[in-house]
Length: 183
Image 1 (cartoon, rainbow, N blue to C red):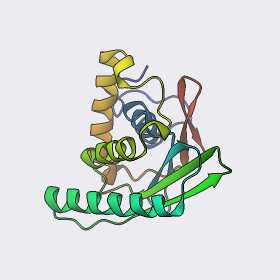
Image 2 (cartoon, rainbow, N blue to C red; image 1 turned 135 degrees about the vertical axis):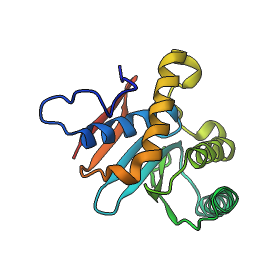
Image 3 (tube, helix red, strand yellow; image 1 turned 90 degrees about the horizontal axis):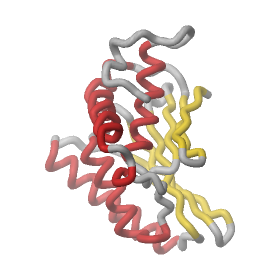
Image 4 (cartoon, helix red, strand yellow; image 1 turned 60 degrees about the vertical axis):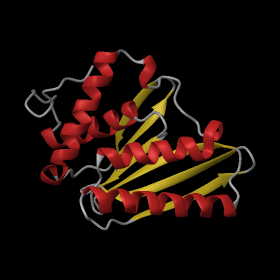
């Protein structure tokens, strides 16, 4: 289980505090947002890529409609919250008629918790039951565990510009677990 004092706690042999923070960041992100299937951090570009998994194929017209909705929503959120103009990219691929993956790539320094919640809500509303959501969603987790992960995510998001994470990492859902790998 993850602790709240992650920045002050002792670090396992071979791990720096920054590596531990990066691992905790991706793990907490996936625990708090069961709509996100996987997340990748790229230190050179300082970007976070979040993958959303859909059942079935996605038509180009529907993809473009969702891209416009997402862009307008995130732009409006940031104009109202902090006056920032942010950039992100949305891409996707289909795997036959059975599955599609949509990727949102975003700089990690200006991402906000409200924006993450907005993205998750837009995916849920737009794609409804086609969006693959982890069975262990927030309502089924122990409340204290979810609260702890939520606090950790908030802490890391508020300090991410100071952390300068150096490791490439990927967090994925594997069965009923969240696993984070250094790449």
